[in-house]
Image 1: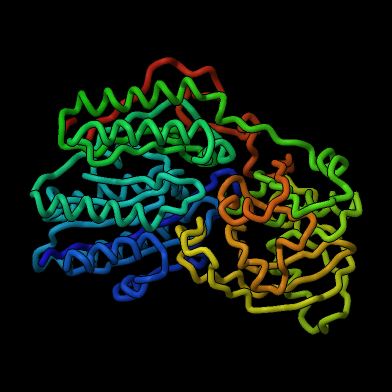
Image 2: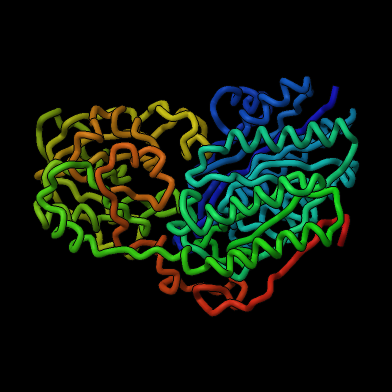
Length: 506
């Protein structure tokens, strides 16, 4: 029976958000708690399914995850490492055959730009780990680094955005680990970084450029039996780190030259398609002036600048202000504002109260909107995802806790107030609070692409709208200091690529 150590580290860090994310914002699972993820639709669940099929003995160490937010406190990463290292040392008294990691790949701490790379490097340095197979799964929006490539044998990226395939991809990575153990062949990772930085709005895999890059990656992967996996990584534009941006990696047991040639093809294709990763946004006032009064709805007003899934606070007021200004009827918005929820304590259902809603989480916002709100309902904010393959399931499984919630109405706008920011990736978010989203005429959506899995099915039309916030699609508005330069669209890119080798071929 093979013994596999399991751990997870999941955080997408927006370095342009002025906050430090402490341990209190994270969910930490230790030991047997990881085994309880079986059936929850998460990447860990995907691994556990294969482990059961292969009759592996799983050594559950630790998993640490939080919603996207600002830089992570160094102490959080060190606390995670301490638990993981202790679990490894305790397990290494008998044989460990492999390590499997469920990662995001875009974490940044106060002083570490590449925590996942540091994690892998530290694992390699542990006694007895130098030659262990280290496999894992990671997010398509990772900042993939040379250190990650050099210290792992096989890391497999999600292939879809919205991330409907997180669990499936984890299963795929675990199946490759089974192949490694069965055939006693140890692959390595080659990588190439393209000089491109795309905002999240340009990274959906349902359209170009990512659809074409994914298709080419699959063609390359199927054409060479020595290529175990080929990853097209969109990157995360809101992490101001050297390794941010588009990258490609190949898991191979063949010649490095062949793998690097394949990655060069992908990089050249990305450069050819670079303009397609830039998506324009319209003024919310212009859109409302055009669509009101709404006939058939719902019409989506999607504001990437306050994208909760990209680390924004989710309490931006621009769409709410515009809806009130234009007297939009039968509209709905979700705003993360625990203070307003608390202010409704003691207010009876059907009664009204004066609230200062939103505008507290980002200095870019105009600030709170003072409204007279009628309380429609309140709840504990817990719900189960309607879609087990939701992008949100990839982040935390199917059980969601929005914190205490309240639904209020202000003029013609229904506002769902949450206490914990929750990405709008599942329609159960509305329905669990007694609101049928398909019956609304207009919905404000704080997202970029990942909402589409849920909302496209009910939307009559959709517009990306320009609002203030830390996830601006116009990257020239952001104060980059550490990304590699030159890089598109901040600069005209060079024609070459930056390539890296695995630890075994360097």
